[in-house]
Image (cartoon, rainbow, N blue to C red; front, side, top):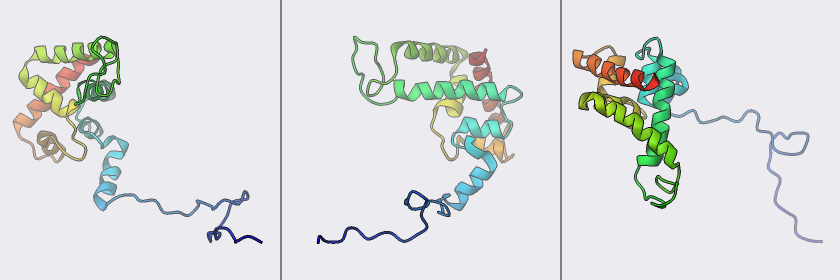
Length: 168
């Protein structure tokens, strides 16, 4: 007779004989992560989402959120760091993701913002394009905590103005 196989793990089993997953504890992150989740829900992972949840985007906030996120999703694969797959083909972006039509759409959108001036582009980039996963930009953090300066409010209005132009 051969050697016995692997020992059976202890625990409650399903009717098929597999270990039951019921009752397992899942890691919910740190206290700060739980606190952020309680305030922002799933929209707290970027600056635009935090502004939306706090009601800073105005009455058309959901449209502005969708527009901004579409631009952010398109931006990093196309203009992020990395090589261009082939300068003759239709594939562009780091590692070849994306396509020429998407790059042209994104470039046209960014040209609209560029035409508004450098202050509008900076505000737009801060809110939409720059990666601010946990906090930032600083002017948005001050607006959320209601400890803002007039310039912070003006910066938000510039970013919202640019988003409105792109959403139209």
